[in-house]
Length: 137
Image (tube, rainbow, N blue to C red; front, side):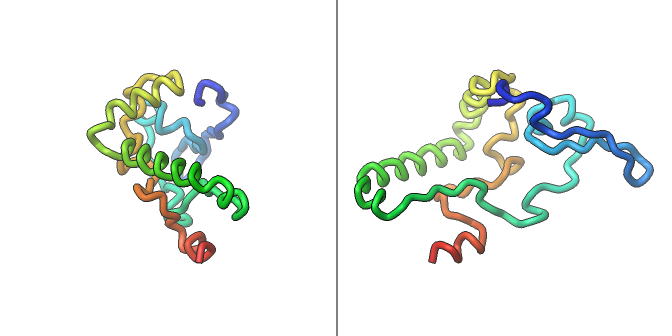
């Protein structure tokens, strides 16, 4: 995926703030760029601003679920299985290698992936936002 994106897909701009120059970077490139990681520090992350949230929501209408129930159950079981596999520290090296193949970047650049340095991933795929939880009841 990263190979399909250009530098224009993220925002990088040197700005003056508190008598020092900082590089403001919004996008995916900081975690995987080892040179930026060496000279930067995280000022805040999304959860600092809005809390832990789900950024992807799967939806389906009841008639579709009723018609395809067995396939939907199979899909959800597979989804749970793969999320738990990726989150298992025993699989971390292989997860890094998969990310490297997909993005055509060196595997070492993904040492943060599926760790506490990454965004939160609920192992049960349960929405974590109070708003999304309230919507499902």
